[in-house]
Length: 245
Ligand SMILES: [Zn+2]
Image (cartoon, rainbow, N blue to C red):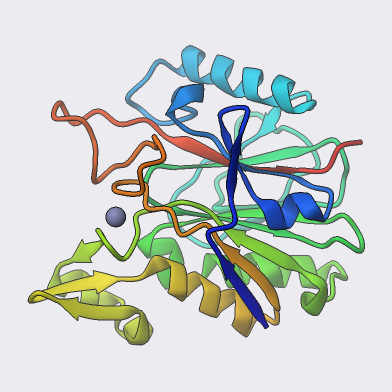
């Protein structure tokens, strides 16, 4: 298995996944430069315009979205559906579809099957990681015929182990992920990156890239829930993946 770190690059104001783009996919992460993409802090029409502008800039009709609820439901999305289905992971085999997961500190997990063109995206905060949404996504793609050993995956920017301290109650809930909980200066740190790498590896994925960029302290102009403005306002960026038709 190969786990590569720090391979993302900035192009056109977007963070791009080198691993996925090397395989011919359009994949990466927006920054604050493109505005907030979802959530309650900014007007919905403004965020819809931001998503439309992103899709256009990348050569797609629209960003396909789901209503994220921090669980592990996976849906197949061959195009935009209104209202957005409630789910935290989605996939498609269809070219011309741009999948987008919103996150401020949660982990966007992007998965692709270069041999068949299947793509998938998951939203994994502490709750999604606890219920193994990344594993559920890979399982859905494998059930459709993908060979897990041929999948490549990219873990985007999120709150990093540098900044993600949690309290005892949450650590207790995460008990079975204890190898990803660490103690530092008397505090408990949860490593969302290693936890999601472990889930992908357990699913058979061999080629995994970790952006290793912390949304709060990574210096990449990203929205962060934990690093939100003093007024409590924060937007969300979008992890995106698509295959041009
Ligand atoms: Zn940090």
